[in-house]
Image: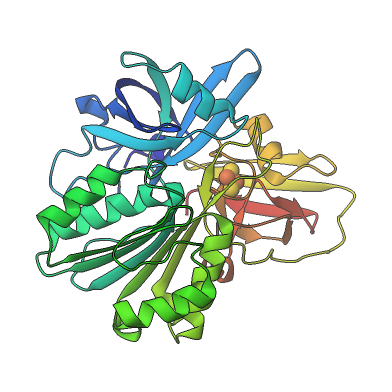
Length: 373
Ligand code: FES
């Protein structure tokens, strides 16, 4: 992948379709020109960041890719498809649902994210809520198409059938691979047939349900995606059932105060900041390496490291600025930082020395970040 594409570069891509999925969601399809197909090659489960510059300023949002990922050795991604659900007051989602039309152009950053299942033999499962189906649809369809003996179980929770995104696409997986794809659909606000009670999918219910459905401990990987509450409940249920942390992957679709309005952004679970409540030096300097070039700049009082870098390097990567998408991940080469919040980095990434630049404040006078690692 080109270095410029890795670090915050956007390309204008043409929208080729805006397909309604439900009353409040659409799938957007973008055409990728031949010369950029390698840049937009993606792994199943990754997301893209979309940017819109309007009178009120710039808005960036991350949305998960839902299509099967391009196979290695092919020419890359000829098209990108994402699912967008309308969020109350959401700047980008309102634009996507109410204004965007085929033929329009949107600025798109290269795919990113580590909520990924590289296709391999095994038995995998996902527990998703609402729009959390989006990356999992890509994961399941890629796996089933590419690995002949892999199996996938999808446990999805939605309010009603009418509010369920990608209903047809999921039914299609069931039709194509009836022996290898298992679907359990739970509706929280609708009576169901087939003996499944309605109501919320919580820890207690999952702890009872999962062993009846699957050989829980023998599963090769679990993918949890959706609202914070559901992901936490599912994580607790898996822990109760003895599933190791290393087999659980999660991505939270967090709806909270992120820059420019409360659109949905995707990221992984909160795992704590690196050094909470540490004193802040009066003066500090950040050194950052980005696409092979380094620079050192002062950090203003109270500002996150990302903002100090952005003042001098407009190409620094970011999307949500809210600690959820992970786009601003950087390796902490030197010094110490305190992070406000972290919904994106896994414990292993923190242990390895990665931080979220948008959430990091210097604790030492000198801090060095490497965005290239
Ligand atoms: S920009 Fe999204 S986590 Fe920092």
